[in-house]
Length: 178
Length: 178
DNA sequence: AACTCATATTTCACCAGTGAACAAAAATAG
DNA sequence: CTATTTTTGTTCACTGGTGAAATATGAGTT
Image (cartoon, rainbow over all chains, first blue to last red; front, side):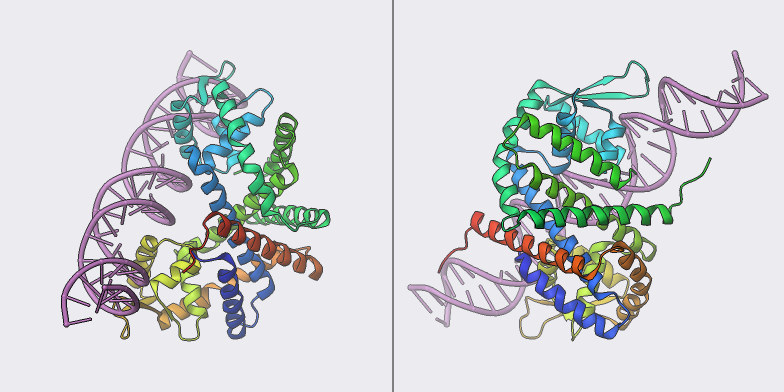
């Protein structure tokens, strides 16, 4: 695969040429968007790569981490869908796979019998605790050269972007009033 | 789907709880990583959403944009793979689809008969020129509230991250010396 | 109670992307 | 000049993820 830096150079040039043909393009913002997408994708790949030896993909990992981070270690498919941005269909498959490996359990809810309660098992907790530490050096290395101000800036700007996207979504799919 | 802001709140809390159980976790960097992944994914979805009315997905669009941005409007499958971060397999399928729609042509190279030359057609150019302008307001809106310094910061930090990832990759898959 | 209407999850059929094996042409070695 | 190795692209079989319909429960309304 090509180095990310090369892709960025080529993207910079490409946007430069396009913005000469189409002058009212917001070239700066377009560059930032492409940058964000490229770096985000590269991070995704890196995570996937790091998880591969443990035979879990990113979605499985995220699901497991949410359960692990919960005080009671449990959730429901619907909630997990919301926070992993996965469709319900896919969550069913993920849960099937994790149940088969003994990392979570699936049981019926007492209060609402439509619901399914998903709970991380002791084996699941051990799995997470074994998985995480080897990841730490890479996570730190990715932010090499970032001082505290850089980290704060980056966090602030990403959160601002999230905010903007939420507002954009709400204005395109307006919320129904009761 | 859940608002991105809610996902972020829940992620912040989750990492807070995990880092109490596992104190040597690089919590700040983990938060930044998750933030980047979430916002990146949200951008991806937004792009996909904006392209849907035109019946192209992100990969098709990128492929087409690279060709459009080239002075001669042409490239090869291999090169397109590199710059779109797509596998060769998938590029074959993408090219098939775009050829079928008459937006690109596929022809044999004269100099190297292994190669296939992919070229954007006039219809492809018109397609891009019609597609782009409606995207501009959204691209600008995503960066609402970013002043020039913010934009420069964001660009610098993302490029730094790209650099770090490239170095990480090179140290894990060392380059073979001749 | 019977009748909607909304919610939660699963099943099914399909789309997008990947790795491994393959075929053709070019480059390189002997 | 043949023989091997490398490069380029395609096909095939598979995994991961999605939308639409099916199923089952719950909640609200006469």
